Image (cartoon, rainbow, N blue to C red; front, top):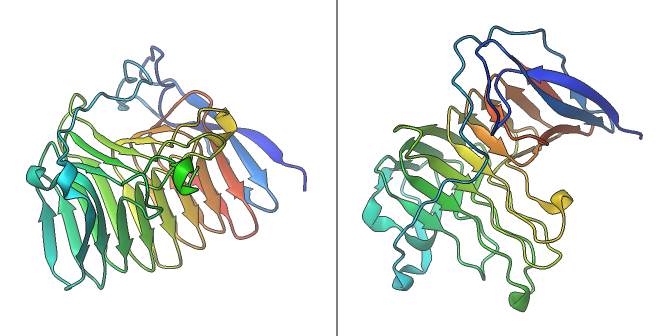
Length: 274
């Protein structure tokens, strides 16, 4: 089916440009194969924050312990907190109705380059991010391992829930970054939410689709929602397309990088602008 492309007005500003309170940002929304994009009326943006100074990713300089490689699993149904001392090249899996909180500043989580698993997997559990100076990054593509695609930073599945918010200030951001692709691979998603009953709430934070060395078309999505999951975006900045496939994506705010597209792909897909 031929794409139905339409312009949508969304609360916010273009990244990297000067903005005046009360102005609007235009992004492109595409309807593909039966997906539905709901048009919105103009909104009062007088209380919206000003635009970021640039679209350049914040520079965070974690100190990583090379001996920290591995997978850490929380599956006891309890509540666990990551501390700055837990930073490392590590995979975290939150399972069986457990809860993982990340509130302490200067916490850095990297997926290893030879793993296809996300940096943080949330399965039937909760992830609560409310901190500052936090970086969570998917794995970099590794052609020597036959893995050219970048990895996902955070994946939420099977009725899980994630809430992401910067609890500090703009100079100490929460950055969620998809893994960088290698060669002809595709960049990883910053956040992937999948499955019926699975939800995510983005209140603030900076979301970067994994970069590509070959083509903009291979930059990963900043947000990917699939298979009846539901994502609500109230704020944050987004660098990389937002993709919905067979699910609902609700955009109530946020700042979208120039060139970002919002794509409703397939029957049962809807994108609404609140």
